[in-house]
Image (cartoon, rainbow, N blue to C red):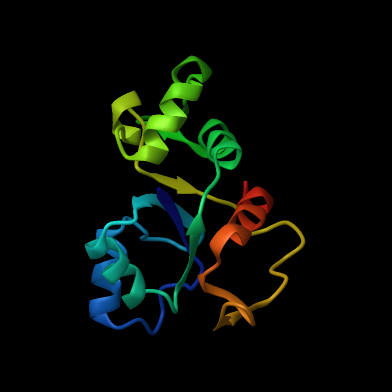
Length: 145
């Protein structure tokens, strides 16, 4: 199972240990997103940065749309649609393949959500958008693509 992590908070006032974990996850800027596995060491990192990120389980349709719209190869070029097949999406979700296998960058740069955040950006879920969103993360991603 793949989780998607989106950085919501900015750079100022962040502890060095938190900044290191965000760098390790390749979340260096606000509104950047990355796909990760649900391995125990990754979940430990997510627990440390949950006050600065939103994360949850991504579904196949949202993942395909995200890769086609916001996925980039080196030189800031879009990914070829022929490389993003249904079998690649399934292997990506199962953890058998990675974005590097098609020559793509491991992170996505997103826009701020259209219509703004529906909840507070300072509180954890369910009062705010931070922390584990579960399946609700797909709605947020579709507004940020």
